Length: 133
Image 1 (cartoon, rainbow, N blue to C red):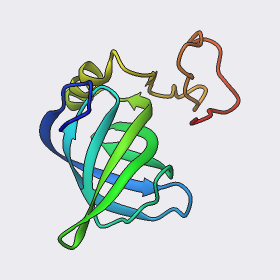
Image 2: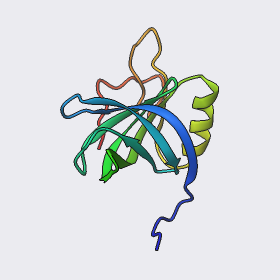
Image 3: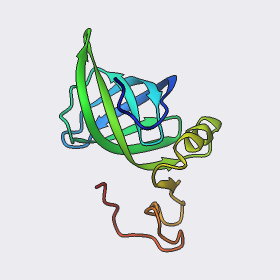
């Protein structure tokens, strides 16, 4: 029985997954996406709760590993998305549309500040750091 409350949308998007604890990186494939998370297949075995960065097109998602299960010679990871940094490409706008209602969408850093704005803050007020949970 599927206990998810949100609709998952199947997709096939190339992405780069980075475990922020140890800096390990691998190419992967996002296989489905929902408002609060994604499913990604890669060669990285990550622990539940580990903070990760997922890069696709010119966007970045930050989140926690909800699960990581072996699948053939790869690992299927569920990522609970905590923060999204959306770029300007068409793929990024599609991603923003899918994730819009669920969590913080953060604009691309400006050249002047080099920083992003935390969700819920005035975009003119730049935080000194961003917390991921």
